[in-house]
Length: 232
Image: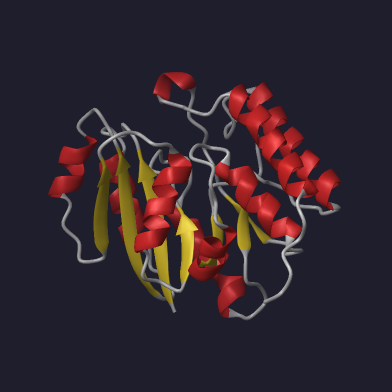
């Protein structure tokens, strides 16, 4: 199996070098590729990516910022692996956890795996951020009669073909809710494994806001009212 690690990047000049090193230093149980989409960065991110040299790395550039969902759409279209996982470039997630997400797939226990964050005082930059995440996750559980622990997690591992079939249209952070809503509408329940997490604050470049939470709730309601796709 080949795993495509998809990394959307926007104005991460200070972190992208370390993010690449960390992702490529992991001992994966399968072949990997790292597909980075520079989503119209206006700082020195492009220059740092231009100096990176690894046969497993591919860089795609958006001329204008289009949002995380759009960057992932570009990366998925270019992915050559059978499976994919999203890894943000902000160093909040530890790529050393990716083999843990792969384990249930390689063992034949799961097809879709989510990394479940356990928030604590050292891993969440604000009370309202955590409550917002839990509120959106609870809404998904109520709407779809499910019980997932972390809807907004970046670590979503699944077959590339499955992600493409979901036809994700959200251009920004709403893609997280759209992916989960469409999976749950198809009655695909993610297998969850615990992961480590260290949130950064606004002063460090945190981009998600309360408006993204409101959008996520709207997207979940929209997906709940749509018909479940019939099997081909």
